Length: 93
Image 1 (tube, rainbow, N blue to C red):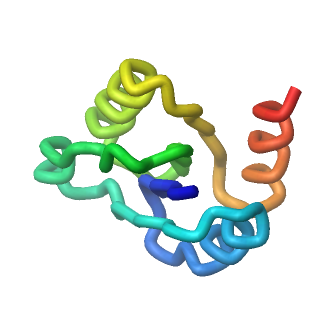
Image 2: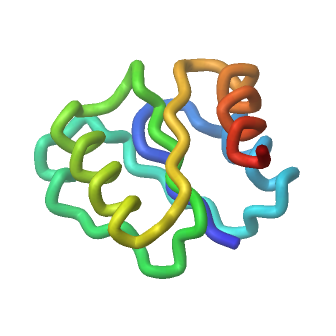
């Protein structure tokens, strides 16, 4: 499985968390540069995680729209692995 993290500068903790959940491939876009709004979500992506405190708003909107079109689950999380864990728990319902 593959995941894409959008936002944040120091994401090692998030990567470790997602690896424990079974995501082998994890990509990261820091989400602060306007030029990143033109990037395409890779087709093998199974999950998109947006760190809402640290991302360009235009990129967040585009990623949400694209993930919905691709039927890929998208998780919005504040900073902290605890908040990501809560958001991920809501996916499993």
